Amino acid sequence: MHMDILYIFLFLVIIIGILAIIYVLYYNKMQFLRTKIEHAEGIIDETLRERYDILIRANDIVMSILKDHKEYFKEHINIKNKQVTNFEMDRSLKDAFHILTKLIDDYPLLQKNKELKEIMSQIKATNEKIAATTSYFNKNTNELNNYVRKFPSNIIGKFHKFKVSAFFDGKDMTDNIYNDFKL
Image 1: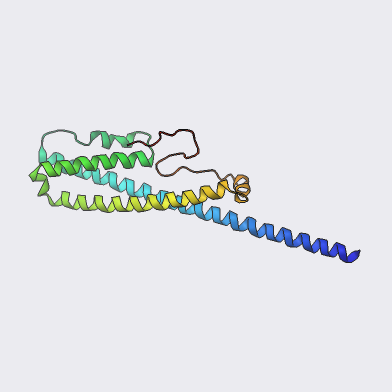
Image 2: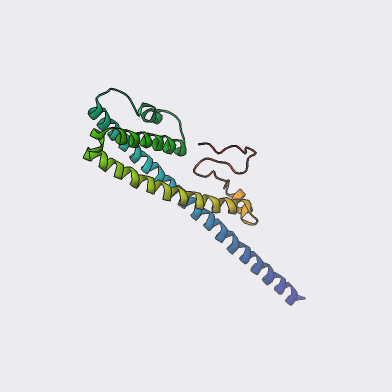
């Protein structure tokens, strides 16, 4: 009888130990993914600020060379004064850079400008950085969302208030909106 209690106690200690190890492993993995997502967000924020500064410089150069007093990038420069997501800011800056590319193609004076050539090179580098970082962000967001949704990690997620996160483009794949892809 005394030995049976000892075996039951030992069995309970082993089960509790295994559950504690599982809990710690899932919690640490979810925290690690959250940290990776936050790091990617920081890189995206920094790169968007860099791209915005590039747009300002490009605008100044275009205005000084063309002297036509048109504000080609006004809408895109003023976006900083609005409450927009990183995705919306990225889209606006891409639109502005498409306008810049068209202006350079249309005006030989702009084509010859060394500063604009350097700016175009910087734009290409920031485009690559944004593309890589958003891919990394979305991959880790997807993985964290899987942990938040699946058993048994979903219990740990609820306990620590982990929530399903949106991807970089802001889409919520769990809602009933089927037309959320916009160009």
